[in-house]
Length: 101
Image (cartoon, rainbow, N blue to C red; front, side):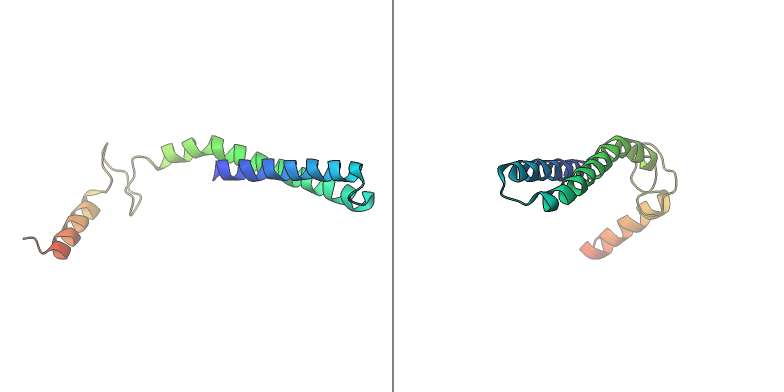
């Protein structure tokens, strides 16, 4: 999500710069461009900041989730995906699906 937000933020900044250049070239009226220059600049800044924040917080949230069952969130042993109950349930579901005894 972070890289997408950063790209969108940079895209808004580029569009804002293009709008300023179009105003200077006389292609867009000044009153219209002035309103959208501020909005585009602030929107680009906010979205870019959100993307940077998401990029910083992503590893933190991944560390907080690590060591927990993917189904119920209970603490689990190292290098495991499921708690003991859900591991047994998953194995049973696999056996039922593939008719293994």
